[in-house]
Structures are given as structure tokens and as C-alpha cells.
Length: 416
Ligand code: ADP
Image (tube, rainbow, N blue to C red; front, side, top):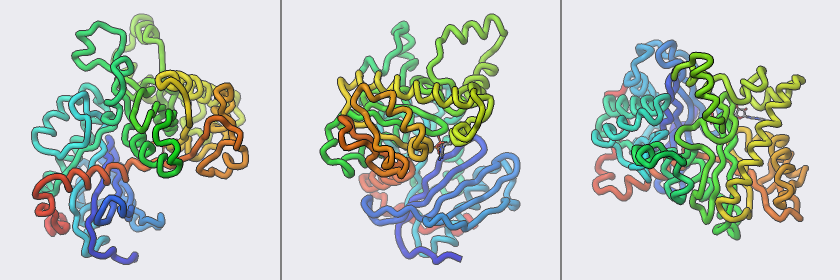
């Protein structure tokens, strides 16, 4: 048994998907001293729920099936989580929950306290993100059901990109469609916001710099950051656009979709499956969607998938440099960006003409600064932390709201 954590404020951070709910818990009295104390997930929602949790040192605290709740009962599962937290975090008050929400549309440019009206507004955005938004909303509604007095905050993947100039937000289509909301939103905003705050702490001379951030994970995108603000990004109306990803194609000529509809009789559902689940690294390699497996594979198609990925990262990074009028630094982050030295090396080689040169040993060692001393453009590896960003927004929003302290409460007995 781990030691119970002493009396402090706790923030529950939730990232809800279709069949899983990832959570983390941060404790601390202020933004500068937020400690990640727990993380884990409930997986198998709707089939056979499983609960896993680890402490800050990655020690396993829980790992087993949840038999006492109906598999599809999200409120029951959240009640189970709260009850477990109550036991684990003795003497700690749960102050609020912060949710990662995929889409804020044009309306939500910053985090917002969840109210019935906000929930209704978020439901109105479901057509823009039908695969993710309903699950984000379901988790908020379920938590409100099991713990109505707990303040909840929504933090959006799209919000950070609202600073982009008009031309970076707009498709060249009839204006009526743009006005209806058919526009480039961009995603991974919480990750980019975190990096925008972290980079000047690591390299203060880059506070006003033009930086391409490469968020390379199972979902991948790039962001052009100028003085910490998003100027452009590779994802668009949905998280399909831009770079090739684990199972998504990235940029694709829309004529391909018309061809598939006409010649193959594919409808929206079949196209959705093709574009979200069967394309990208998996589709090209026929081996895996996981970069590790591709780098370890002897298959020529796996090598081609890696090459295609690195080519597009470098090519689109160059386009983003144009959006900022230059390039002063590059940052790699997320699963592939933080962990794959070969991918970073290949992307950097392709950006050599822009003055990018890595220090091979620093790159292999995953140093924070991996560029060679003579590189015109410094290159960094910075682990992202979207959950901490959400915790920090949640704390800010509650600190600014009147009566927030009054609504802080110990974890509820009712959740047991
Ligand atoms: P998500 O987009 O789901 O948040 P992550 O940012 O966690 O994804 O990235 C997950 C991906 O990171 C995995 O699919 C895997 O391909 C990749 N990855 C993790 N570790 C390594 C590694 N050592 N080398 C190459 N790729 C890695």
C-alpha cells in the first residue's frame, strides 16, 4: 500500500474516449507546485471494464476488472474511480475536474467552466467531431450525475489555434461554407500551449522566436509558434489533415474521395473507416501503426512508411516556417517525437538546407537540446504534458471564479 497523500487540493483530469477514460490527478495549492500524483485509465467501457492506476513513480496501485458496475454505466464507473481516489488520497479535497475536449468550435477560445448551457453548446459541435466529442460530453454529464457539486472545466484542443491569421484558418471554398464553420480549426492545442510555456523556461532567448513544434504521436501534427502564439498548424477541419499518422493519411487530394465514392461505391461510413483506421503508417506498411514496430521491421514497405512520414514532417515543417517568415528553432514532442532518435535524425537531415544539424550523440541520448553546436537552428526534445496544462487551466479558472473555494469539498461519501 502506498502512503496516503496529505491534506492538499486535488484536481482530477479526464480524457474520455469511446471505450476508455484516461485520468490523472494533480495535487498542490498553486500552479507552480502542481504535482502529478496518480494516473491511470478505465478501459473496456461497454464490454468488460478494467481499472488500472499508477502513482507518480509509475508503481502499480490497481490493475483489475471492475465487476461491481454495469459495463456501460459511465456514472457508475466514475463513482468507482472517485471512491478509489477517496481511499488513495486520504485527507485530500477534490477541488475540481478538468476535461480534455476535442472541439471548441469558433466559440470557445479558452477553457470554460461547465454549465448546462456549455454542455448544450458542446453538443452542438458534435457534427464537427463525431468520433470524439460525444464521449467527452458523456464523461462530463456522468461526473455531474455522480458528484453534482464538483466544479468541472472544459479545455479544448482547438482553442490555442485561434490566434492564427485568417488565411491560416480558411479553406478556399465558398464563403457561406466558411461562415457555417467549415474551416481549419487545428488540434493538439493543449500540447502546443504547454510547449509554448516550457520552451522559454529552457531557452529564454527563444521567447519571441519562430518555432516549428513537431507533435509526433499516434496522432501527429505540427504547429508554427511565433512568440508563443499559434500562427499555423497542419491539422484542419478534422484531425485527419496534415501529416500521415498511425492509421490516418494526412493530406489527401479530395479528388481521391470523389473517386472512391463514384468508382467503389463508398459512403461516409466506409470512407471514415478507411481514413481513420486503415490508412497512414498501417496502410502504407501493412505491418503496424506503431513507429517502433516499423523501425524494427525488415519489411521494405515498413521502411517506405517511415520514409513517407519523415518526408511529410520535413516538407510541412518548411511550409510552416513560411507561415512565420522564418525558422529559429525546432521542437520534437509526443510518443514518436520524444522517443524516436531515428525519426528525429531523418527529419533533421531533410531540413539541413534550412540550417538544421543534429548532434548524433545528444539525439540518441534524448538530451533536451539535440542540435550540433554549429546548427543555425537549435533543436529540442521537450516531453509534452497536456494533463498538466489542463490542471493548470482548471486551477486558474477556479481561482478567478467567485465562490470557487466554497465549492471545494472532500471526496463524497456518496461515491462509495
Ligand atoms: P497519442 O497520440 O495516442 O497520445 P503518443 O504521443 O503516446 O500517442 O504516441 C504513441 C506512439 O509513440 C506509439 O504509437 C509509438 O508509435 C510511438 N513510440 C513510442 N515510443 C517509441 C519509440 N521508442 N520509438 C518509436 N516510436 C515510439
